Length: 138
Image (cartoon, helix red, strand yellow):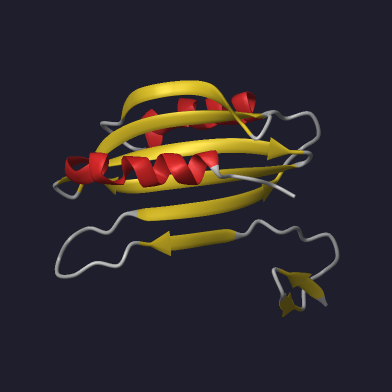
């Protein structure tokens, strides 16, 4: 029996926690809610945040046709290098924007993904920046 985030499940030995936590803005009506997703992924030894983020960034054009990268930079959060990328893409007649921050802690990556409609993105930007700046791994 393995335990991940206080959840037990019967799996063979060696499975690793690749948790995903998604938080969604409360909305009224037919608006597209903003979301914050936190993803934890096991890594091979020696992978750093910029390398991991560059690999992801290189895959964007094929994964999201029409994707436009607005900003890509390495910032410091809590004394650690965090790769921050901001991009937008069209989907289903709407334009979306995402800010993604990638932090590597040992052999695990922590990716914080903040997504919203492009038209109202500036409304959420302070909240998203606060979430990225508060990112900690203990």
